[in-house]
Image 1 (cartoon, rainbow, N blue to C red):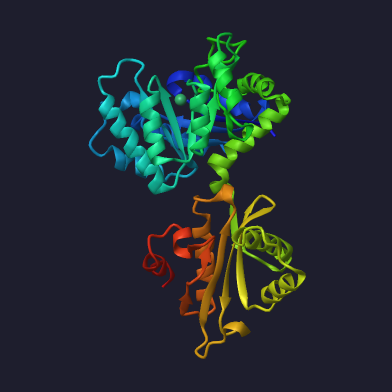
Image 2: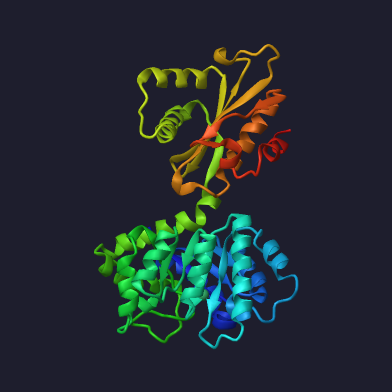
Length: 401
Ligand SMILES: [Zn+2]
């Protein structure tokens, strides 16, 4: 597995005519994925075009604290529309930066909070920039608890631990390789390995031995080697773990496949369903008899199951049963269906996967002439519509008919 640079700025302004040649060569230098960050309204178009030109590059868009003073009235709207473009997978970078003075603190905080709000609304991970503004940043992160990363981390080990506790990831740049990097190293030590991200923040922050030179994503090999030393793993392992972490945070949604289970998926259906049942029933396991019934309903057409796959692995399932076919639910008027369950593995929640599975199921039910759907199912003890991210069952039913 190659390098995933989770934070890069590839703008023509900085790289000039070299840019396309450089980007064309990165995959040969073990760079597998890049998240290109567009920082202000002026950079949105260029970033969106960049990710369209290169398969391995994904994009993030946000309003950096540097640009909060000259924002037009409709900036939020512009950002929201831009975020809907293909392969834009995160909101960022944004946050607080009091480094060059702080006379616009309240404006910075306002733009920070509004972007946290927007990320919640759009269900996107965030990339947080924070410099010399630790307290104010943490206050807002505690309030909003976003899914995302604190990038180019520059605070203490204690703060790193708290960021992790809030559910976020922590990103380190080439700074980790510098001689005077004590603070960054201590913070890196404090973060569990599965929450670490590697990034360049290029064209700046080149790691040793390139410090001060123009940086590009291939140089992560050096930052990764240093991080590996700190965490006590091999450099290759570290690159792979950080790649997986980045993918889990930013890309799962765009790479997940949702489809109706077929005959050949039976073992995947049974495995994920057993996992779901043991989660819902707090560790209880289910006997062969139960599996047998599950198998029977799957094959006799009484149920339709939709699976969500991350590569080879099923990470979610949802099942609807057709009441007129299910002996235990006999109903005189037929053409009724009942949502049995929806399950998404912990790591994959809050990415709209459940919603997508439900859409597929409901389409299938409609094709089969179903005109009524009951929804008294719960998922992990919560009403199903809530688990799916709807405000109420009415909103959910609207999607149905
Ligand atoms: Zn940046």
